[in-house]
Length: 317
Image 1 (cartoon, one colour):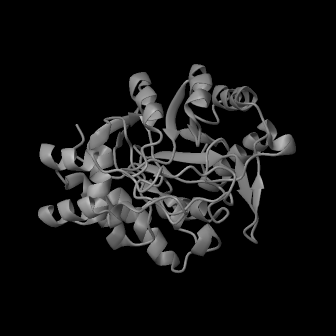
Image 2 (cartoon, rainbow, N blue to C red):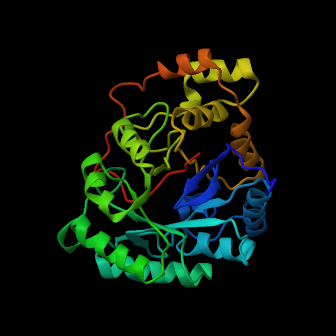
């Protein structure tokens, strides 16, 4: 039996065992998720160090760069460790000037999967997330980019049946869309969620009941307006001080403790920050700390973005 460390403990994704703390590759490209990294050697070192620390779930997308994150993953880790689960997202493109191009039509989803296969050097991608436009932050679809979820899932299922993808996930969806998608065999859901943004709690409950992995983005808040930063919260900072850890680690540890099907994918360009994020696995929140954190609420009504921001994603940690 393997004795390899599994930060955060072990869970499953698409039937494969993964550590509950993974890595999101979004920040590896240059500023604004565009262009090459500031320091290519450091970006490669971050990926290799993540695997050394026991991370075996890496989340990426062709539009990170574009193509940059995928290329870095291939350069750093190929041939891939046998236990590594790579997850990509489809539903948008980005040109090299930074402009977003929505790509919600079935043929565009298929083309994106083919691009990911080539860039990552894979015959099959373990999991591909369909990035919908139902929840913010992001543009609302218009014209021929308004595509019914059933038509999109039919294409994703065809790709799965052809062996090009192993499993289907879904991202940025409200509960009613998730319920419609369940018959397709959804293995994970990626929605914005944190200690200070629990607007998706009911969706999380359905995922827990259905055995679906919950992979929150913005687990510490984000740079988007309306997403308060968890590390700035007074209760979080107080508990961090008591435990001798960082506020970010407390925020990540709470998300892990809140639901057993949670998989975290915090991202960073720094080896030190990577080690801090993975170190959240060792933060033990006792009953008192959890009770204090559970009473924390976001300022105002919390984030409710839809159709008001560019289609982009801010740092996940």
